[in-house]
Figure 1: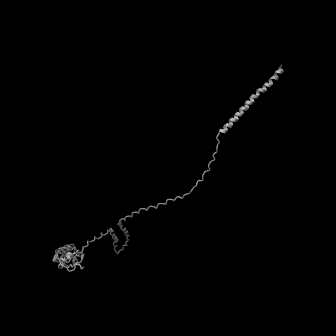
Figure 2: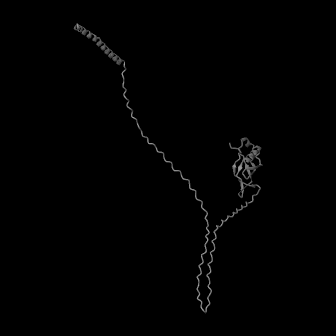
Figure 3: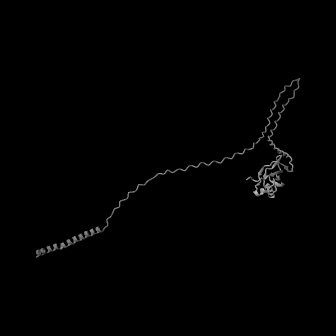
Length: 249
């Protein structure tokens, strides 16, 4: 009975291990499928290579050194003022008088002893007086030379023949004015010390009063070189004659 029971139980154990093995295989297959699916969904990882650094250009620039500033000139030293010379008064001390030597007299019977004459002291030198500079002589004012007396000039006008114009009169006439002229115009003029005409007097008319008045008016506007007597300008009188002739056709 015991042996039969053991023979019946052995196949039952073998049939029970088969389902476990298939479950293990199924689990492994599912795990592989899951891994493959995960790998299929994963994005590819791209490895970025490090960029090669660009070469750096280095340029050396020579810097200009600042020029040293020139030394500032030293201010000139003030010139020392000359000190006034001091006059030293040297007092000379009198020399000591030599002591008189005693003279031993040898008295004799017949001769009397002569008196001993003491040497006279030397005269003391006079003290040196300080030298005082003498004051500079004061220059005496120079008398200005008196102006020379100018020669006397007469106050009366002086009649002169020739005069020189600085500004001439404008005496251009029209044809109608020429037709009524019968002779020359003569005037007497007074020329002042500045060359200006002080007065005009009609001496001879040309027959046309309009021309006469025009000559007087223009002569007052004229300017002359003043006349001189002994180098001094004086009032002068001059006679002017104007002979108007019609222009030739």
